[in-house]
Image 1 (cartoon, helix red, strand yellow):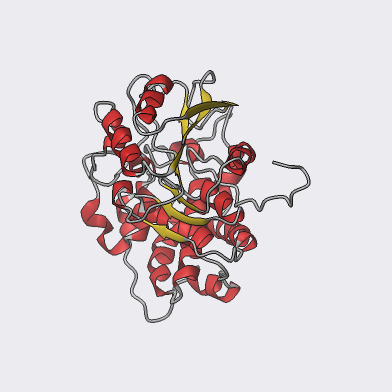
Image 2: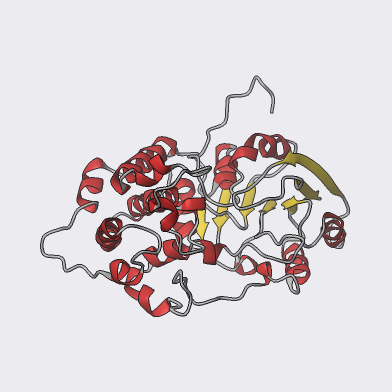
Length: 349
């Protein structure tokens, strides 16, 4: 980016798996070279890249297949001027007179992710949240709750039953015990303040959707694709499994009926996706490229993934006459032991 330009707004920092937060300056430089007005962030996650596109003045549709992420996207991308008020927070974080509270989290997740006291707090807040009348303010509250829950988890995930990592009195070579032990309310208020500080009106309508990307019913000048990653061994990143607990918080009333009680960490029942299946991933990419063949296609990818960079380039070339490969350098994600993989950007025009 030209150093004379006004510095871009930055979204709240996040511990969410796979976030492109640290790569935003490089992505901004590449977006600046492209001519577009409307953009789809097809697998937007918690919205770091969608926020970048919004700050560039683009008309952004931020899509994700997880309902928890759609709420985060509504809070930060679609929302142009609503803030989470202090009095709303005060009411949200304590039991309200006249309400009967279920103890679903206490009953179901004891000893799995959070302490008994934390589970009681979560049961209350999860059932207070639907009572926030304004859609955007409610989305901001969910966002703050999600970020607070992630911060208190080892590895920032819900992929296994490992509360013991927080509670064991042992010498630690990793992790942040001070962060884990900080009260939920402190985390919530900090993330609410961080979100409030990043809300702005871009002057251009943006929206947050929760759909299969092939069902997004619009055309766009540019489509940014950062799909779930399948490593060279064929193991896919299943965000629904990693963040099932957040999905449950969104649908508290129906959560219990969706839980897989045969697994120790009590995730949701499995939902198959071609984006995590090495046998279907090539076809999934080809279908996506075909669906948005009239758009500039920008694909964030890892150099050691399935498909390979060369295979993905070949797929893009079926639909685009010009495809560039742009290395963005080495970047290591949580849980990854591979520090040799490079971030690569593919641009098809």
